[in-house]
Image 1 (cartoon, rainbow, N blue to C red):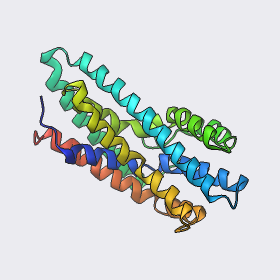
Image 2: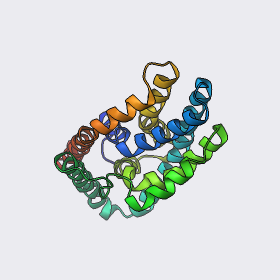
Image 3: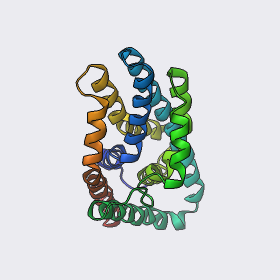
Image 4: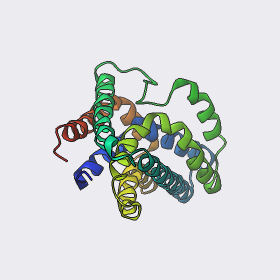
Length: 232
């Protein structure tokens, strides 16, 4: 079994957390809630936290499925090393794609952002959400739209964790997913405590989207190179 370091999981989770795709969806949700409840900050707080919790739970479930899938694949000892090295190559490719988005950004880029074909449907669903129950449903449903642009680091992390006993993977999955949703929670709290306006956060995200891709790319590529070199 390969050595597992907390830095590896934190790096992959951080690369996932700064993904503009997930942040954009939360901002759309909060903006929609604000339009219906311009002076009800408590509702914005509850909706934002419910949305984040729903994504946390769904991604945890996905993580368990990914780990079980890789456990079946790696049951044959002779392909374990090949699979492990494949994770490294996948991480490097994903890192390169994100860095490419920094150099030459294109909305809806392959494997790094939500495909353009998904966006009209996602917006339609988001605009129908006005409360906590809807936010919980949306968090669960929207993960299907997030998968194409956020699952790269998670698949790599799940593959690494698959070498561990299933019960021992639970704390790692909880850590990964807490880091993943932490920007969503932070944005919700910033808006609730009037530390920032949603419009300002949206502007900041749009202005720094290329830098976010660069950070995600560097973190993911670094993990891939470390695995490929056998340092973990």
